Image (cartoon, rainbow, N blue to C red):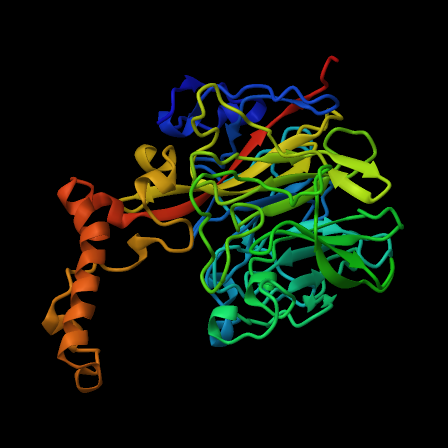
Length: 474
């Protein structure tokens, strides 16, 4: 658990009212000391009038700044996650969407109310992307067709599509799928008869969790696609050019030693994503990259977040870009937000990171979305938000137990209601019942015995944190 000290909110945010101590206290975050990078302040939680800026559904807040209403002030956009794929798509306000919190302050001292509106395209339709698992709408902005307007993009869980919302200058057109080599719906798995190589372009592993960012990584004047997820951190070269983007095979991004980029080192085997056949190359499987020149040396760097479940996890991992004869390589990852004794730097899990100049002082700032744990109908849970989910054994965002009625311990009678007893046979029925009871005992039953029944009401909510940057004195 965390050792806390009070954070003093800065600027206009300090006037937004009182806040529970467990949401305004953070451990001591050390300066990573990286030359050329901003020196970051302590984090503060972004609030509206009476409560934190938040997302509902399953959390997975993905923040960005954009002047949504054209008044010259950047507003706060927060993407969120809901399962809305297949026949359920589109779901409008109930889907994977973007909340827009309009800035009622100034561009250098942003303020927000508790009210928000849904981001809509130029036709008035709510912006939405289909997601069947845990990634959410993650808006980033890049000029993909070289028309002078920044477009909006986001990735998807599976199929591995990247959706392009082209800017008209006055808004965003309905989304279209970017052209990529291969079939983003591919779901080959060597464990189930797939004849190709494990992890190749025809597999589920290759396409799953296609979080997306863009940057000119090969220095040829157009925007290349960078993805994270099940097949590791990869680059897909823009083979269509600066005005007609299309993207080639995803190739692993390598460090200066020729090894795949890793955001998590662990002694035990990394967890595989649902449907995947092998552990992820990045050590986590839910990496979400942002391409940015963080150290101001003119070379693209990466800021990468992940599931943030394991005690070895970094809230944000920094990969410094290095130009070599073999192309762009990266220094091994550095923990951007180290703490004194290895505790969590931020509450919750599943961070999404964005970089902008929050207070218009000319220095880059870090804007972070996180999924914090709430219980009992929305109470922030200190014990769950500040402990690693691999320690508490609770579900990550996207699988909230509080969304469903508590499940009773399985019995032969209760399972017989939905099993084909004749096909199963007596012996297999007994084994099935036993396995389900053991699983219940290890998960739900354990919590009842330990006096933690309230954990079964867990719902993740999105939060947004800001760490202001100041010029580093070298």
